[in-house]
Amino acid sequence: MSDIVRALQAHMDTMNPKEMSLAAFIAEHPQLVVRMSITELAEQSGTSAATISRFCKGLHAGGFTGLKMQLATELAQQPPATSYQDIVAGNSLESIVAAMEANHLRSISDTTRMLDLKQLRRTLDALRQARRIDLYGVATSGLVAQDFYQKLIRIGRPAFTFSDPHMQVTSASNLSDGDVAIGISYSGETPETIDALRCAKENGALTVSLTKFGPNALSGLADIQLHISSLEEGMRRGDMASRMAQLHMIDILFMGLVSESFDEYVPKLEQSYQMVRKYRKERGR
Amino acid sequence: MSDIVRALQAHMDTMNPKEMSLAAFIAEHPQLVVRMSITELAEQSGTSAATISRFCKGLHAGGFTGLKMQLATELAQQPPATSYQDIVAGNSLESIVAAMEANHLRSISDTTRMLDLKQLRRTLDALRQARRIDLYGVATSGLVAQDFYQKLIRIGRPAFTFSDPHMQVTSASNLSDGDVAIGISYSGETPETIDALRCAKENGALTVSLTKFGPNALSGLADIQLHISSLEEGMRRGDMASRMAQLHMIDILFMGLVSESFDEYVPKLEQSYQMVRKYRKERGR
DNA sequence: TTTTACACGAAAATAATTTTCGTAGCCACA
DNA sequence: TGTGGCTACGAAAATTATTTTCGTGTAAAA
Image (cartoon, rainbow over all chains, first blue to last red; front, side, top):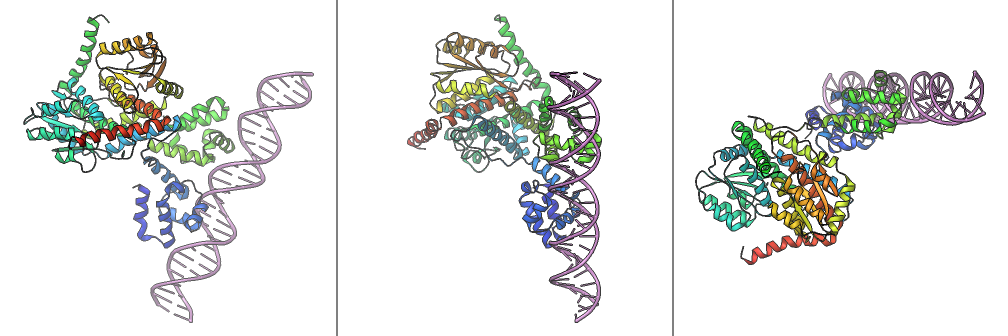
């Protein structure tokens, strides 16, 4: 909720009836108000220009124009509540591009917004101390698992991931105390991933889930829950926004790891790149 | 840099001297301008109210008040527009999360900003008609290739991708006229990917590159160039923002394909999900 | 019932913005 | 150099927006 709306509420008790209705109107249609003149607002809200002017004085908003300005700035900070856009028939390229951008931006900022720092902290601690790290996921989530896998390998952490569900369970059954297993599934209801994570837990590993927000089998099972925003429901099976959010979370984990053990990991990172180059060169390219 | 400043620059060439100085003043002191009346601004900028009013008309900003409003909104949005942040030692978790968010948001919107609709159009046409689609990429870009691969398979397009470089070239050598090959590499200098794409081209396939903006070997080779924003330079080897941008581009391609052949592809998408469910059920889960 | 206080809008006053209009400078062509 | 067309520009007029003043009506206090 924006500052102005709060300011309005704070003044509620000292308000006259007309001012109340005015405040209500503004709080309800801020995006309209910014485009109105004082006379228009007077009509629409059933008051008079004089009342509005007085009202704005009382708010220390610097007159009606000042109020509009404040509204404008605050509306800007809470970008147009664009909702996730679905794939539809025959959209123009421009609108597809715009929709995709809006979805991805939204997905990432929503996920950041609902991030639980405590769980993040626990996950990082677990990852740092883990003797071995297993990553589970199928289809799109499998690619997310692989992404994290590549990153962990680059800093020399013992990570494992398998796209084959049987191998996932097999690997899980070899875990024990001191190991960490991360199950990735947007819905949190993917049987293969659930199986693998349950198996890991039964064998004593610390389990982490990365799912959409809200109750689901996978996060119910896990010791630590990480969540991504769950607004993609109804999207036409793209998995697009959710995968962005998952990767965003992976990046946060990775950056957290590297940043907290900077001296240990950064040289390894650099080295892993140098090595690839070096061996290419030696082969003569 | 904000939209208005960009708009100002876009109009520079059609500006009169006074308008120039006005534009310069606004670009330099936007935060002052929002608090000024048109007369004040006229004085400060050494012009007249009439000129300013005309100027705002030309900008399609809805008059001077409209311009102020836009400035206000954009100044409000400024904070998140931070530049790409590098991984550094011992950052607090909060700042890591904030940096990661800023990087990803930036990467996606920058990439959208510099998107060339013509190349996109050509790529979509090529993909729709392609007899066969090969995707090349190694390491992180390999995962992007796989991501697209999964999507294409879901809508029944004949796509191929291999993480093994030998297999990539082998596959490329089997292409011919009417086939499409997409090479993915952030730097555009990955030898394995270049080899594969060159081979594809030599065999008559239409070649598409997905690289950072700017000259590089891969896009020099390709018939169609797609670009992602190249601002990650200097980042500590995360490949994080660039992979987000690449996936963003993939999603645009995919959504474009699906949207333009809605009736054909959407049922296939739905079906691919139903089938996975069905076969799970039949196995008793 | 009268008085007092105050919310409220009509209208006046003020301020801000836009439009009109005339001047000055500039270039093209005689 | 003169003439005519053109444009940029600001002064002032016209329009529009905002604030202030002032008077009415209403409702509580005396």
